[in-house]
Length: 114
Image (cartoon, rainbow, N blue to C red; front, side):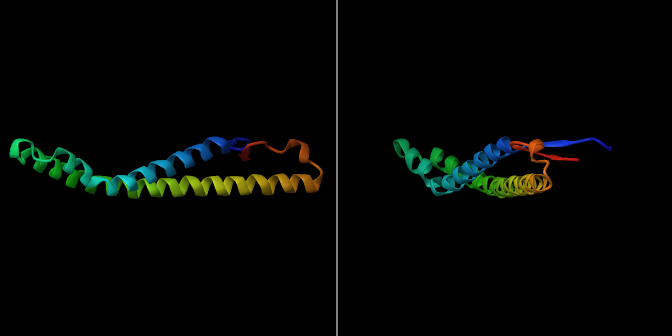
């Protein structure tokens, strides 16, 4: 595997991280709105069957959403950590190259790991 390289597209990872944060925020906000649908359905013609079905669905979905939210947070944290570590490594390598007089070959926006 000598000579193999892995390219880390920092900008893509930053975009992914921001999108994951937005998704996590939306999932968290959805928990606060859980009763809205039930209230919107109400009891048409005095019949509560639809409202009861909505209530059952909401309960099941809340459990699933909580599990999914937990996984999304984990993925978001890992992507954010990867961005931070790759950025730090890229900066450290660029600084090292500049100090040794080889700064012209520094990566721009990508860290290269051999």
